[in-house]
Length: 177
Ligand code: OFO
Image (cartoon, rainbow, N blue to C red; front, side):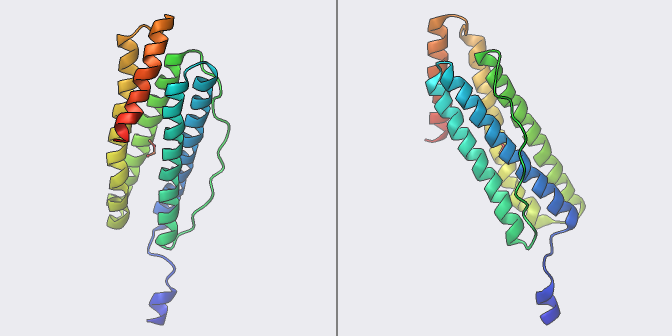
């Protein structure tokens, strides 16, 4: 019994490493959204900025959830160092193109973790990661919806910008209902 208790963790090292990498990715996603929100805010898109401020907060929660899981299963959660994130965007639309691109990259990373968990028979982590699979489906859908709006509304005209700002913010509001 004593020996069993001394076993620090059943978490395999390779899983611990990819979970820490995912922590970094989620923390980075949070910082990216924060920079996007700031860009929107200072360029007159206050409503859609609020949506992305909220997204930044959500990504921070995603990061913390994995961070705490690593500790819960006896691993070492490493505080990620997040590098520079883009602060400038050429257009209103390009912010949301970058958002979708970032979400697709996160989905791919999560899928790889699930595949790795299956390979090494870590069903507990696989089960834990399924929450992220569902979450990503939603987040990608929302990011695509924002870009669809740019196809429907002229983002060059002042009225179009005004309407787009309001419509994009509604995606966030619908999410919180
Ligand atoms: Fe949308 O990135 Fe988190 O999971």
